[in-house]
Length: 243
Ligand SMILES: C[S@@+](CC[C@H](N)C(=O)[O-])C[C@H]1O[C@@H](n2cnc3c(N)ncnc32)[C@H](O)[C@@H]1O
Image 1: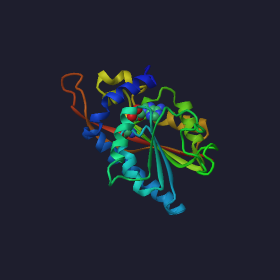
Image 2: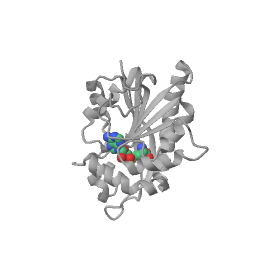
Image 3: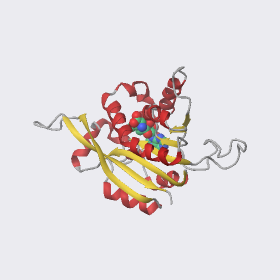
Image 4: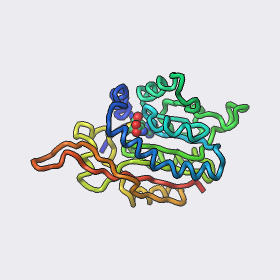
């Protein structure tokens, strides 16, 4: 497929205002948070509550808002300004978490000055590194996952971990995750488990573990008479560590 960051950006700017009204999106976020909680808790058990998180492709911040109370700070990045503006509007409310930093950027460089500095007293110095990087429902939009994963590993502290969640490419039927009209904004129809494991190892992640973490029920298009209109989609959690 031939999606581009621009096509992705246009689609998500257009969908931003109504993003949080989609039941499947809300349910997938709830399930992602449930899958991530053991990892977050094992980190905090080791390090106390001091945990710096980066979320790639945060969208309107559905997952960031749930993760925020469990961590020190979460930098929430997305390339679509419409999605980030929705998150910024949520953060203006008085009872919102105060530890989310929204950023609109297609981040390619772990030393990009748009990231917070590692040392607040040296604002032009090297950029902050993270204990945990998450991304939910993003991998299938990224044209080339090699540079993307290189950026991620470069944003981790030594010993830091990624936990990336997206639906599995389990064959032809996985294409039904999106209606045909949205296929041109997807780079791939889900993530193939073994391929992703190999790619993460090639980039330099250790302790790589890609497994099905949950299954989402989702309304789908019926391509022919007799097709189901609700399908089960397995979701993968792709874990790895920076040595
Ligand atoms: C399907 S949406 C998921 C949004 C959010 N994670 C959620 O589950 O509600 C995919 C998001 O990833 C963003 N995105 C795609 N590629 C990206 C990249 N390389 N860097 C940052 N954001 C990206 C899109 O702008 C969009 O907001």
